[in-house]
Structure formats: C-alpha cells, structure tokens
Amino acid sequence: MEKLQNTIANREKWIKKVEDLIRISGKSRITFNNYKSHINRFFNYYSTDTIFNNVLEDEILEFIKSEYLNLNRASDTINLAICSIRYLYSVCFKIELNKKLLPNVKRLQTIPTIISKEDFIKIVNGENNLKNKCWLLLAFCCGLRASEVVSIKIENINAKEHKLKVLGKRGKERYTILPDVVIKFLRFYCKYNNITQKSGYLFKGLGNLEHSSKAYPTVYFGIIKKKYNLPKTVTFHSLRHSFATYFLLNGGNLITLQSLLGHSNLNTTRRYIHFSQDYNHLDGIRYVD
Image 1 (cartoon, rainbow, N blue to C red):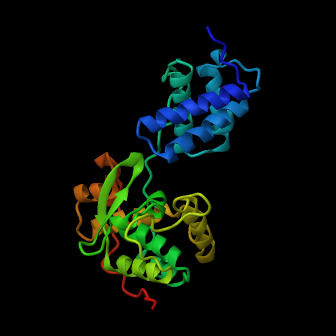
Image 2 (spheres, rainbow, N blue to C red; image 1 turned 60 degrees about the horizontal axis):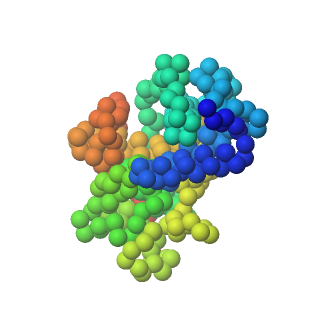
Image 3 (cartoon, rainbow, N blue to C red; image 1 turned 180 degrees about the vertical axis):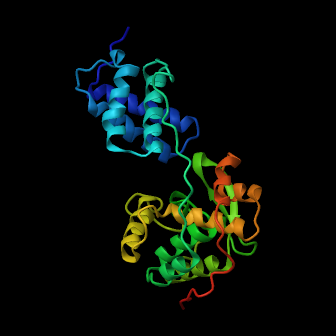
C-alpha cells in the first residue's frame, strides 16, 4: 500500500484533486474554499512525517475534539470539518471512514434571531454608504444570504416584475421578491456609481475579484452591532431570518417561502412560524437624491 505521508508535495497534490472534483461535481468555489480551510487545518495538526494510512477514525476524532469541540465551535462548523476530511479520505486516499466511529454532531434546532422593523429602519436610515444600504435591504427585504447579496448580477434584476434571480447554495437558481424600496435604492446606487451596463456583477470586487467578498457584509454588520448595541446572537444572516418571519406573519405561506429562500427541505422553513410581529411596509425610510 502506498504510504500517504504528510509532505508539502502530497498536500498540494491532494488539495488540487479535491478542487478539481468539486468543480466537476458542480459545487461552488465557496464550497471548495471551505473544504480547503478545514483540510489544511487537518494537515497542519500533524507533523510532516505522519502517514495518513495510520490516521483513522479514533485519531481523527481526537483532532476534532482538540481543534473544534474543545474550542466550542458551532455544530455546523464541526460537521463541515468532518465532511471535508471524509471527502479527502474518500477521493484522495481511497479510504471510506466509518460514520459510526466518526459521526456528525447533532445540530441544535434553535429559533432564529430576528431584527424588528423599527430597529432595521433605524439602522438603514443611519447608514450613509449606499452600498451598505443596498446590502441591508437585499437581505431584509428579499431574504438573501451574504454570499447572494454580493454576487447579484445586473441582468437578474427585474424591476418591472418586482423579482430578482438569485444564485444560491450549490449553484441552485431561484427567484425572490423585489420590493419597491429595494428597487429605488439599487437605482440610486447605480446612478451614484455611474453604472450603465446591462449585465455583470452589481457590486464589483477589489483586485482580481469579480464581485465583493461575502465577508464584507458580515464584517460591516459586526460594526453595526456595536454601534446599535444589538444582541450577540444577531448577525447579518438575521436579516434573512427576519424576512422569512415577517413574510409568514404578513400572510405568506410556507411553500412560497421555501421557494423564495431556496430551502431544499420544508422543515428548514418551518422554523419561522414561532413569531408574532407585524410586517407591512417599511414606512419611514428616507430616500436620497
């Protein structure tokens, strides 16, 4: 049997194979970057003379405990790490790890944290940067994830029919609603930045990036949290949770919401039926010329 030694050359070869197979399977670049991050952490945990033929479920479990469980990492993060390692072993080492000996962490079903309409209007009105305003509105009023917000394409904005085409997780396309308030601020943004083309990414990235990184909205929202003293559980993703919750409370149905959010499982969408706030119009948002 070939010795699977943890050398720099082997690491590069294995990472390249993981990347190629993920691309062929149609998964996104974000998926590969997540896998790569956890796999590299796994490599770095061991010395360069480690032979991975001998590092199996018991040893990997110790790695997971040391680098994730003992550091109180989120269950989704731990499960992604385990999934990444299983994928590495399967496609590069031809070893199928036993899921009973290396199980996923049970995901806690928590009620999503939302932001009240009043707090949201206060935040939007207090924001002077048009791009940041658009990011907030797209998440809160259209239900977009951070990665979906920054990767919007101009040709997918249908103002006439009030709908937006979104490229979601695993490359799945869907349509969501596009309220007037969002359309108006997107137009302000295009006018301010002299955007006249009819296609391409709306929010351009820095350097060689085609569009802004999904880290930007989340980092920016961390500043917002401190400024408005929001609870620790509130994140940029809470804006998406708020959209879903208020959509149901305003008379929307679960099946439609599932489609708008891009959920593959209806049970994921059912989480949003636990709230009782009113969501009508975002009265009070000031427009700019």
